[in-house]
Image 1 (tube, helix red, strand yellow):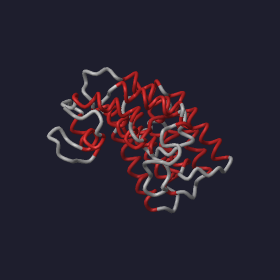
Image 2 (cartoon, rainbow, N blue to C red; image 1 turned 90 degrees about the horizontal axis):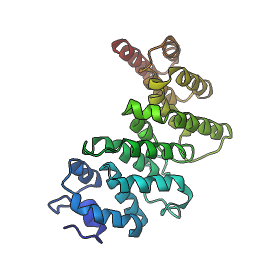
Image 3 (spheres, rainbow, N blue to C red; image 1 turned 60 degrees about the horizontal axis):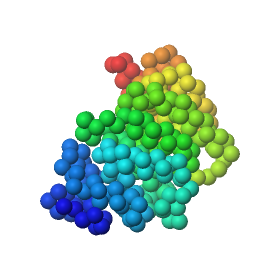
Length: 264
């Protein structure tokens, strides 16, 4: 029986008691076998240090447990009052910005691998909607976009929130507000799920991004990657346009995207 009061054992040991990385323990528990530590993890959500509260939420959410989703949604809806508000407990490697919500979004993505007997789609939808509500304020990288694109039904359910997140982000970008991370890149990432559910709207945002960030290769490459899942003439025209940019890596990505379209 895992100690209800020992965060290190709950988060960083496997079922044999050997020390391990958090993600390895999460992966090992996706098929079950860690039920004995669920009460301890739930206890950590309210009583642990901020870092341990975050990791317990990540673990429970990854395993598809409602307690994890509940805590995630609460934090997203009250993001100014998270336990780590005084000092971030995890950081994005390059920008050194707070990456807690990216980690939580990745946990939602991992939850797709959880035990199939758990019906958690509505929890996933609610969590994604809550995270999209703060997308323009926090670092997410690709994590949330990749969680959304995993399930077309979920992507359709959160479509309006995707659009609202893009609009809020574009407003911030127009104000030239510095957030410490690349928000324009995060907007480009949301084209990955959006292109599959509303190509016309995705085209509109892709054109806006290209017009404003034609000098940002990373953003253009992300757009090319997303448009590789398009089917219409408008997305193909954008890809053909991107091929004319004098950026070798972008040209390679664009050609790959066009080839992918032809196979779909």
